[in-house]
Image (cartoon, rainbow, N blue to C red; front, top):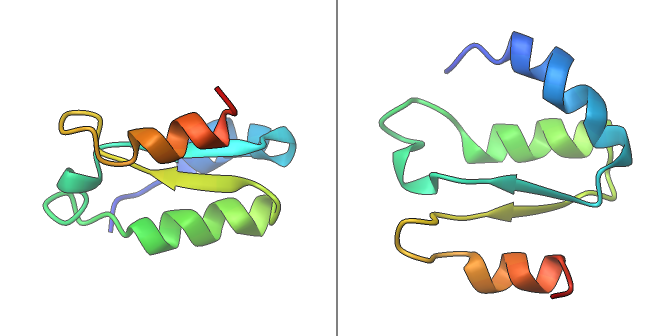
Amino acid sequence: MADLRGFRFGAFKKLGQAHVAVINKKDLADSMEVSIEDLTNDIHGINPETRVVVMTARDGEGIEELIGALEL
């Protein structure tokens, strides 16, 4: 598992106000030993109301969900 302590204390601190959080590069998660489920749980642990969009911008996976989440 990747060490995300620095990330948690920086970017995660702002999630208390976030309506949408985007996890990109889903396709690399396994090779980087990062659990999308753990990241999502961490986000919801800080703000249960935050909508989490998991995507891979390279191939467009999740783009429609992101657009919907941003109400564009």
